Image (cartoon, rainbow, N blue to C red; front, side, top):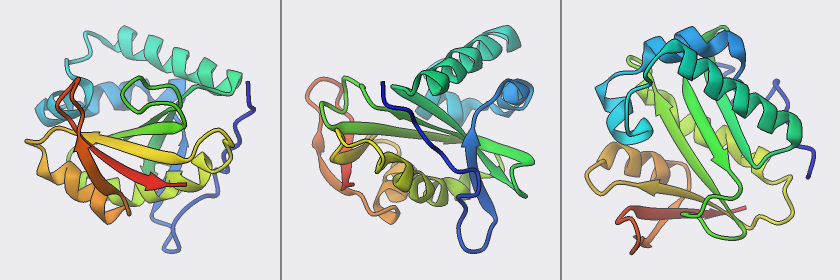
Amino acid sequence: MHQARFSASSSPPDGNIWLRPLEPGDAAAHYGGEDSQLVRWYAGSPAPSLVHVSSYIGRVSQSWADGGPKFAFAICIRGGADLCGTLDVDLESAGAGPGHANVAYGLYPPWRGLATAAVVLVMPFLGQFPQLHEAVIRVHPDNPASACVARRSGFTVLEAGPEDGLLRFARPL
């Protein structure tokens, strides 16, 4: 498996938004940040307990150590101190297809305006995987805010996937 590299110093010029690997110490903030909008558009169902969230973070931490194929990022402000949401990258998502990385994000209230910056920040990370040629964001047609994030991040709409009805946005790597 390819050894994934991610620089914690990756931040926009203003230094306000940071991405770093999601880690066990984030479990309580991640569990506490979930609301009905995050569940509806991102998670699909509420996390049953803090134990389940901790188990999930353990699995994605192991995936980081293994070099993929799934990578979960913490979206943070103030140099990584405040967890605002998560961004997931899946290099083998059935919904994205071969050569594509699926990118998904979820922000906790009141941080919903930070998604575009987080998506832009993850793009250089994806460039290190030679098998990838495109990033894909899949959006429910009833979620215009997420479609706006994809467009502002440089993605263009392709079509609705026949298998799931989600809009597919793509951006070349």
